[in-house]
Structures are given as structure tokens and as C-alpha cells.
Length: 252
Ligand code: ADP
Ligand code: MG
Ligand code: MG
Image (tube, rainbow, N blue to C red; front, side, top):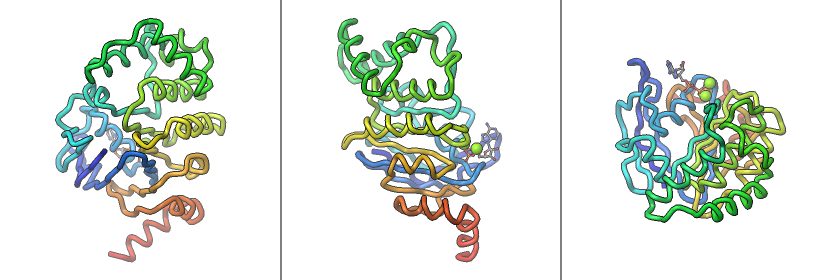
């Protein structure tokens, strides 16, 4: 589904990503962990197509297509979903209208007719129940005045409605309380399937007690310096990131 080869990126001429290799297959959940400032959010931004970040080398293939050549909105229509640490608030655009427009664009891109108003409402109702989303929130402006937990619920409702192939959730440093973590985890666990994949970016191991990843990668100074299975997350929790840095230095 996703193939990242030797990806390098800079901000203001400063190299941040220094050669990332990662392969994600359908049905998999990958966790990306790492100390603050290692480049986790930068990786998500580059995959989303944020033009603040200049790609200086490498390749990214998404379902066999060159992701780096696609404008951000086409990436989304191709089935890439990005949930950021700080979701945007869009005053004046109701949640429901945002979902309607986004879904219509994705369907059009795939050659599907738009859902009728009735079909849309039915799907919304179904998904709201699935992710336990409070009905009154859909008519509010997008994320405006939402609490942290409500924003997370909203993110999960968007996921449920838009059914992306690959969802990248950047939860780093967001100070999520335990309820918000559970919302995200329950949502991901309900929505995961053989045909989609998730990349969960997190500084903390706690989220991975609720979402069991197939693979864990440690990003440090713009490179993935270690990959493993879920046990690696437990090891990091126990020994901290210094252990990784030390074992890296020892191997040089
Ligand atoms: P992480 O998400 O792992 O904490 P980031 O990707 O946010 O790390 O940041 C990696 C490095 O890139 C940091 O040194 C950070 O200061 C720098 N960086 C990220 N985004 C920007 C930006 N927009 N402008 C300047 N520096 C940035
Ligand atoms: Mg950070
Ligand atoms: Mg970050």
C-alpha cells in the first residue's frame, strides 16, 4: 500500500528527514515512536503534502502511484487520511457539510455517483452509532470550541465516514487524557480491516496498550533506527529512548 524509500526532507534548508524507509501493507498497523523533535510530525506533514516541507530526496509510492507528485487534495481522494495533533477549526463550516463535501469528492474521484441526501444521512447515523458520536456535534462548526475528546471523536467519525485506505494519526505530545486515548483506540480497533492500514505516531507507549500494532518503528534524528513488533514499545517504555541512542552509538 505504502512504500517509502530513502525519503529526505528539509525545512528552511535544514534537513529533518534523513533517509526514511518504510513499507506498509493492507491490514497492518504500524506505530512510529521516538523522542521529541525526531521528525515524526514532519514525516506526517510530508506524506500529507504540506508545502512547508521540501522533499530533497527519495520516493513515496501509494497503491502503486507516485504520492509525491500528487497535490494534497488528490492524496486525500486517493484514500490517504491525515489526523493531526492540532485539528483545524473551520468556523462557519458545519461538520456535516464538511463530511458531505469530502465524501462527494472522494466518490467522484473513484467514479462513483454522490450519495443521495437520504443515503448520506443513513450512513452518517450508522457511523455515528459505531463510533459513539454525539448527534448534536455534527451540526456544529468543524472542530470549533470542541474539547480535546470531542475533536478526537470527530476525527474518528471522519475516518468512519470517509473510509480511507491509509490513515495516519499523529498523537504526539497532544496531552491526550485517558478518555481521549480510549476514543481513538476504540475507533481504530473498530475501523481496522484487511483492506485498510494505519500509521499511529505516538511519543508514549500508553496508546499502544489499547491499539496493538503489528510493527513498531523508532524514529530518531530523521531516521528509523530500529523496527520491531509490539514488544519494542514495551521495551521503550521500560528503558526509555536513551537506551536506543546508546545502543545506536555502541553499534557505530
Ligand atoms: P516530532 O514530531 O518527532 O516531535 P517534528 O517533526 O515536529 O518532531 O520536528 C522535527 C524537527 O524539525 C525539530 O527540530 C523541529 O524544530 C523542526 N521543524 C519541524 N517543523 C518545522 C517548521 N515548520 N519550521 C522549522 N522547523 C521545524
Ligand atoms: Mg514534537
Ligand atoms: Mg510531533
